[in-house]
Amino acid sequence: MPSAENTLTNEHKADFSTIYTNPDPRGYFRELAPLRYQVPQRALPVVRAVLAASGADTVLDVCCSYGINAALLRHRVDLDDVAERACDPARQRLPAEDVIRTDERFYALRRRDGGPSVLGLDCSAPAIDYALRTGLLDGGWAEDLERADPGSALAEGLRGVGLVVCTGGVGYIGRRTFERIVASVGEPERLWLATFVLRVFDFADVAAGLARHGLVTERVPGVSFRQRRFADADEAAAARLDVLARGLDPAGKEDDGWYHADCYLTRPATDAAAAPISDLLADALPA
Ligand SMILES: C[S@@+](CC[C@H](N)C(=O)[O-])C[C@H]1O[C@@H](n2cnc3c(N)ncnc32)[C@H](O)[C@@H]1O
Image 1 (spheres, rainbow, N blue to C red):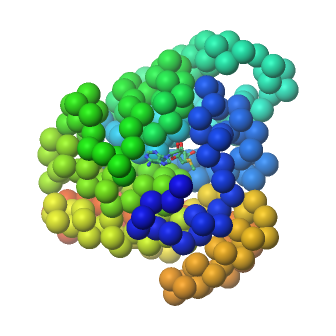
Image 2: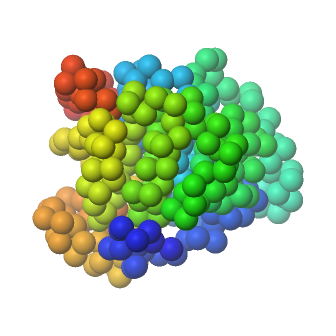
Image 3: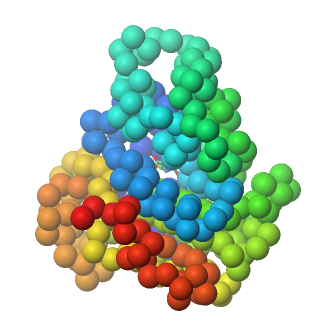
């Protein structure tokens, strides 16, 4: 399951791979809601601020699963609404086809005007299918760029991407996926990325690859983003060791029972020189 570059805690992380390949997100939220999965909601203010600063009109959500970031970004819903709907006891016996049809209507009624075009990449075909059929994504591809170059349709879709976002993906994906995306984007020298990376993982290798395209990566300082609670004591112990091995202090974060993610902002060197992160995210971060 883990990519070759990041082989720390994924060895010990609970294996949720079956919940990514159902035809709809009910199983995903039944597993993750009790662990208070929340990184897409925590990331949202940063994603909005970065989207505005980048000027991008097409966003690629990498490891998008069922299109959750697109749901939050472009609809009048929050993650609690989405999770509550997916876990609603009255909906558990519905056939997946009915869930997809009614979710399509649910999101259509809550769609915000305007907003970017959102594309999604995930290795799970059923998750991409759900996100496309419910209208959450404008384009989506089920491919694994750790293993192979993008197919022609994905390569074509990537051409207009101006912002890449990723929550909960690094560890499954690493340098190869990011390299292949940047290689397909029409203007790689103008690309922005907002990547939320569990603190157990190192992003330096990916950042070094992006630097070869003139893109500067900085960690958003002074803040981390809760991802979810640990599933069990083994996960907690392994994560604690991993952050310590990286020279980080788990006090108040992993020690309190939570996976925390850092946010890495990658952007053209000229943009990084022109606007410090603290200005760019002044209204997006907790005081
Ligand atoms: C923890 S989920 C994150 C989903 C979503 N971004 C979120 O924050 O809720 C990880 C996702 O990565 C996908 N994934 C795993 N390996 C992948 C790969 N090699 N390429 C693309 N997606 C992958 C899984 O199918 C799953 O949907």
